[in-house]
Image 1 (cartoon, helix red, strand yellow):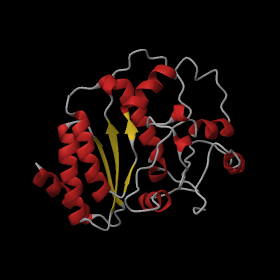
Image 2 (image 1 turned 180 degrees about the vertical axis):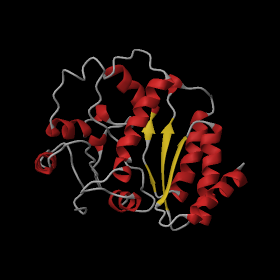
Image 3 (image 1 turned 60 degrees about the horizontal axis):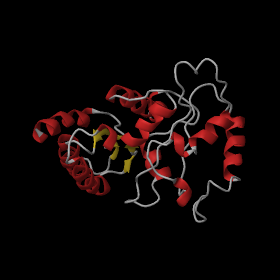
Image 4 (image 1 turned 60 degrees about the vertical axis):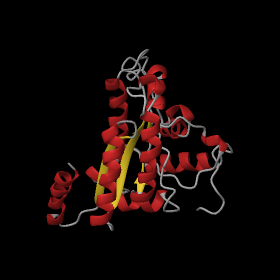
Length: 234
């Protein structure tokens, strides 16, 4: 199967200016972990100078479908360290809790989780698909968010996440959105960022947003003692 996939990637050679590859897969499944690890290795061999950004999904006990998911996740992470430039992690556990807390879905299904994941990916790649004054490409993601080659697992967050019943009644400001992004309840990974410090940060806003409001919100975040950045990073 890997030979057929690599044959398909030969169409890349006809592109005028390819930026890199976006790879979507799960860490828990056998194909998502084992086959994707091999694919990343082959892409590194044939397209070593091109960026390889991938969006892996970590398994969750709440919606587990196989006993070997933890083993697949651990082994596949090694391939991500060696053969990917940047990996935007998404955790099924965090998405599961967001569905229950923000969307009022008592028992989320795979469809509910996938809708959140797709929304996050759409926001992440919006600057690649639409014109804008502050758009970024794949290389800029890697340059801004990866301080060291092997430390390339950014913490992904998304806000606001509102249910259908609340969306027409809520008035969200740029300041609120920025505050919510740094809240652990909006994270796509189940962890506590307050136990460490941020080395880099990239905020992507969609819609009719005034840059002045963004600058004011970012300045306020920098003065927040709970959100701490390392001293050696600008």
